[in-house]
Amino acid sequence: MKTLAVFSGKGGTGKTTLVACFAHLAGRAVAVDCDVDAANLGLLLPGDDVHREPFLAGRKATINSTSCRACGACAEACRFDAIAWTGKDWVVDPMACEGCGVCSLVCPKPAVIRYHDNLAGHWMRRRSGSVSLVHAALGVAQDNSGKLVAKVRQEASLWADREGIDLVLVDGPPGIGCPVHAAMGQLDRILVVTEPTPSGLHDLERMLRLAQHFGVSASVSINKWDLAPKLTRIIEEACRTWGVPLAGRIPFDPHVPRLLAAGRLPLEPPVDQDTTAAIEQCWQRFSEGDSAIPNMPAEEPWTEQPL
Ligand code: SF4
Ligand code: SF4
Image 1 (cartoon, rainbow, N blue to C red):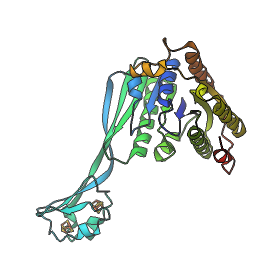
Image 2: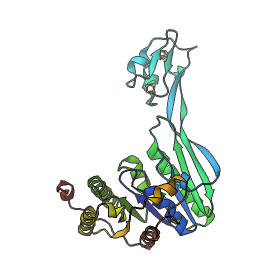
Image 3: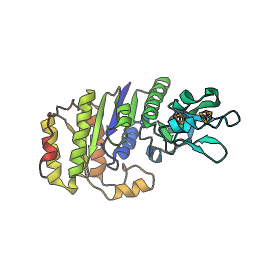
């Protein structure tokens, strides 16, 4: 089984659009949306979820008020100010509780405090034509996105194995933090999508440094390259210096956002043929393995240079 992933270093570069197009072009694949904080790959891979499961992570404390002595020791010890006096009882605010267990340690009657599993979100499996999708929804104010990313990655691989599908396509989370680290394990190679802007170059560099750290081969695609050809050339030159191949250069096409707004992929008219061809070429190069482990310098000369 081959596992390919698309990252961007930040949101809004067209990463999810490319993953949906790649899944369509591959014909048969399991796509997995690792942006569990704001999952939207499902908008471009419509269909019915065939499975939905709760995702439990961490724990929350509760106080049994009938046996509590109301001494307040737990509230004093709680570093998260999660225990408050209502005028009648001491109660735990589940949004503030981190499940650390200190309250039970200081309580004269520890059995009064119980812990229960925390419902952090849900994960789902969907069929969308010949493409299968594993996606998730993290609950409001939940902070277990790294664990949920690891879960959807695992479920996508299991499903591909069960169904005899030899390609898993990962839509990576934005940024370079914990959820990205969770998404970056056990990958064959990654595509980093960027735009010809100073921040695009900065985010690309950070992403490639991360790929180098994890020892993952990478290639680069420049989205909307023709909006700033000079910056595109600077990014291409930087990629050459870092030893990272360019998989694609995709032009700006005003029809793309219109099609996306209608839930359609930019692989058909009225999208310009050049745009479609650029996406197809990017997929061909990426899927066939035109990539290399980035060779980044210790210092960061590119971000320091005036553009
Ligand atoms: S488990 Fe920790 S965070 Fe939660 S109420 Fe007890 S002391 Fe506070
Ligand atoms: S420390 Fe125990 S007995 Fe005291 S208020 Fe908290 S839960 Fe009740």
